[in-house]
Length: 262
Image (tube, rainbow, N blue to C red; front, side, top):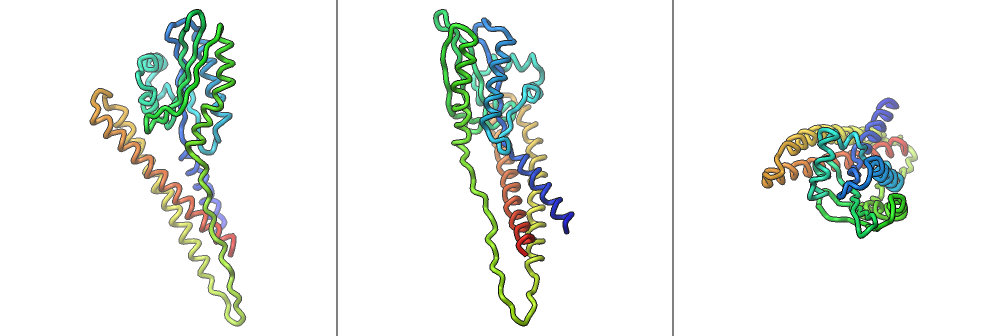
C-alpha cells in the first residue's frame, strides 16, 4: 500500500507541474535600429528575470529564448516575426503562451524611449504597460527595474489564489461491543483509483492538446475562420486537461487524507 501511496503522490506533483501557465517574454525590438543586439538582449533578460522573481514558480513558468525560437522555427525567423507582428497577443498564441510581454525601443527628440506591454493571450486584452524615456540605455534599464515587477504582479491579481479543499475529518464512532467495519479503507482506495484515473485522462487530453496545437500552428493566419476554430479547439483542450488534473488532485487528496486519518 505504501508503494501505491507514494506513486500517487508523484503523479499528483507531476500533474500540478503540468498545469503551469506559461509567460513568454518576446525579444525587445528597436524600431529605429539604434540600439545594439547585445543591449536589446540584456533588456529582455532583465524582463525575464523580473518575471521569474515575481511569479510563483509552482503556478507560472517563464519561457526561455530557446523554447520561443523552437515554436517560431529559427532565430532569424523569430526576429522577423517579432518585427512584423501587428498583435502581440497573436504572437503569444504562436508560441503557445498564456501571457506575453514585450519591450519596444523608440525615440522622442534626442531621448531613447521604451514601452513594455503585457497581454492575456486567450482574451487578447492588454493587462498593463509602462513607458518612459532616457538619455541612454542605462536609464531604460532603470525603468525596467522600477516598474516591471508591478506589471508582472498583475498576472497574480488576475489569477487569485484558489483555496485548497481539505477533506473534512471523519469523527470516529465509539463502539463498545462490535469491532468497527473498516469500510473507510475501501472508500479511500476507491478515491485513489478515481483520482489516478483522472490524472491519466488529463495526460491523454494533454497529448490531444499537443496534436490540436500542431494543427493550429499550421493554419494560415489569413484564413481567419479556420484559424479561430483551431484556436478554440486548443483552448477547449487546455480547459479539459486542467479540469481533469484539478479534480484528480482534489479526489486524490481526499483519499490520502482518509488513509492518514484511519
